[in-house]
Length: 317
Image (cartoon, rainbow, N blue to C red):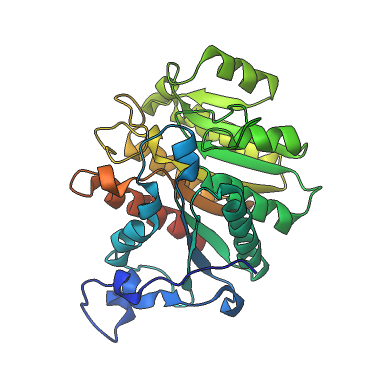
């Protein structure tokens, strides 16, 4: 079993409207801080305190602080779910210095263990290198022959070469070149946020992608239909959100901010669509950077996205 460090209980604090009436509870009153071995179904939060991939990719550092910041953002939100809906927090995996690859392996083991307990993993990154550890766990849980669909909400393809070393910009190329039963759908691609080589690489690897400027309100129905088709073609689905896909006006605290980008309502609609599908196994949120945030706006938005994911998982159960 991977080494998971428990979080301090003081992170899960907030307003108390009532100590007995569950209809008045907030996240901090229902979350159970526990070990993976003690989980039995429900939904399990695990953090990945890592930004080594971002450093290697020459991004702005600070994402390693996001897991606990996102927990604090979640803590005070109302818990408006059925009484039998259980939320666990199993703690954080931390990257030791530059040891990215072992940390990703540890995350993969933890994700696989959570899935084996019948729970849905909710992974709080970290840089987007979090996704590779997330993938390792899902792949191990579903078996090497299952068709896996990976859905990414992102401004960037993350298909860079990994000959010298993996980073937060290489994960999907690693997966697609090493796993013949994995497919990749990315929504939010910036036309001028990726080189022509990356577009060519995406075409070569059979990536399905939707440009950011195509994701306007009047065309969301087409996107949702495309997502339905993609999920229907696979045995299992996993979802990852890179918060740099958002317009910097809404999410200034990210590793690679963009003056263009998606509005929160569009990202929210995709999260609800994908996590509400019966084949979706898990969700991660990456690249939130509390050290560069303005008035906690990005952290708060990220916490609301996590809440939306959990709500959709619960409501489809």
